[in-house]
Image (cartoon, rainbow, N blue to C red; front, side):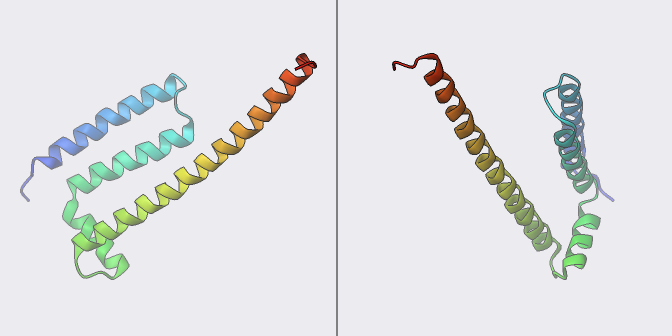
Length: 116
């Protein structure tokens, strides 16, 4: 098996990001869920870089797709769509929280300044 340059670079980059994530978690910038999801992503990226043919062939076989490249592309699109829905839900939650906070502040200010 011939080692290609990306098989060295991607795991190194993943290790750097994982160290950064662990540091961020210790400083309280990340919660445990964010840490675990991010580490899972980077370990997956490193594994895909180290064993690209084995993983892409496995994914193609699981989904019944003839081409391993197409299988990886379809899987990636699925992950991106899932992430998009998660982000959309988070935006909706933030909008609700902002609306609630604005109402509370407006009511508090109205009680402080009754003549306004």
